[in-house]
Structures are given as structure tokens and as C-alpha cells.
Image (cartoon, rainbow, N blue to C red):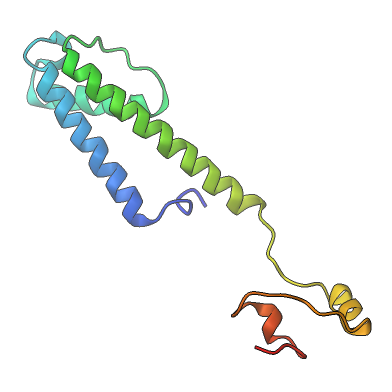
Length: 132
């Protein structure tokens, strides 16, 4: 259920953008920020941790470059939009009821010979007495 609010394509794009942001932050901060120096493994780990942590909570690394701040601002805005979209999709999936007719309501309509408007191709037109 965790993965359903987004398609696999969206998840892949989010992962790509996360890695791209990680690379850009590392590229901009590496020359001036001592926290982004060290062995290649440490640099990659710091950049990945920085980008991943920004998804959920504040990062502890200090930002020295002003361009990095712009990149992070855009990334945080994107994270905000993704979080809102994911939450809306998940909550609608968990709360929406299927639009199926109840037997009692259908019998009431038939008994009183009431007409019902419906969109072409919906289940109402396929019921007995429907004209679809």
C-alpha cells in the first residue's frame, strides 16, 4: 500500500532527482565545505545523507555556497509538493468508497419508475432497464 499512491515511473523520477540533487550539492559544496571533503566514499555518503535527510528532517551540514541554497530551496519545494501529493493520493485511496448501487436503492427506483441520469459507459447504463 505504501507504493500505490505513485506509479513506478514517478518513484523512479523521484529517485533520479534525489541522486541528481545529491550530485549538484556535492559539486557546489565540495570546494569550500570541509564536511564534503575526505575519501570518495565519505563524500558520496555525506552528499547522499544530506539529500535524503532533507526529505524527512533538517540536515546538520552547514551550507557555504549560495547556489547550493538555491538548489536546496528548489529541492525542498519539490519535496513539499511530492509529500502533499502522496498524502492526498494515499488518503483518498484509504477513504473513498466504491460507487456501487445498493439493492434497496435500485428497487426503490424501479418500483417508483424513476429516471436516472448517468454518464455513458458507467455501471448504471448496464443495469436491467438501462438504455446503454
